[in-house]
Length: 423
Image (cartoon, rainbow, N blue to C red):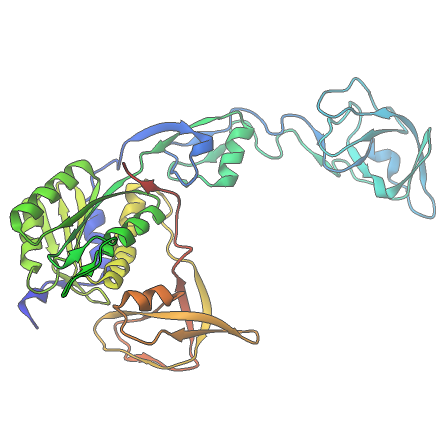
């Protein structure tokens, strides 16, 4: 085995090394408006300060009644109740429901005193003074109790919960318009390589456009963090060290792409080792694509030396850095990619001793979902871009046979929240 790859680790070990190097307490917290907190991670337990809805309310359009007055009602032998008014929407009512009385009420209306159930309007026949009930109700039927949605003093959300649309709605229902969340981690992105040119330029002989700055920034945003690209840096020690020091000082994590394959690999190792202890922890991963990846922790901040190949860089970032960023974001439940079950429609061979991620496309054949391996090398960006997800071939297997049921890890609906590009 080449010297560069003597210190390889398995994928779960790579993630563990980075997680163990994180400082206690994670990133700082800040208070933000609930309306702008989608995808953020709640920084403290939230206890409900009041009941929701706060009053007993009708769950249906119909008539507020005493349930005991309707027990004998049926279509063949209806019960007749006195109609005594209507509950106004949006405010309390002074109406009281006495025995054998019914009060018109709309969905969401305040239950009047004396009533304990609502007869749905479709189970009544109504005249000016009388309500004919053809189906009885039990106490509490079609009624939402004042604390049925959220009870005062209840633990609404624990620290580490990702705030989604439903969580935002629950907070404002309680009158909570600001929430303490963890600050979004900032990830510095450096692309290194003398062959790279900006995407807006036409490459000359031997040159290629810088794909990784854009693709990795998009991956950071999809992971719910802030991306801060530092542009293209030449394969020169002084320039790369200066850019890396600046990025690590300004960011919570660092990825350097392009300096982890043979030739300039040692340059990136030296850079990472000078950014702070403990430095480089592993020089590769038992993974295809993405084997030549550097794993480092520098002064409590995770850092990766990614392959320059865009597909490999994106794969490793998703498998290794995204779980670490979830921890930095403060998440207490770290999800993975969403999955679907499918049938492989072509056999795929693999070498033992490494985990291989095979890009596949998905399609329906009748009612059967099929996973088709994308033709071409797995480290090509076009191959990855055409794929709907990956199928894992474990280290101990030599492949997967056509017709096997497989789990497909979907690319796009990956884990968490909402981020943006840092300014």
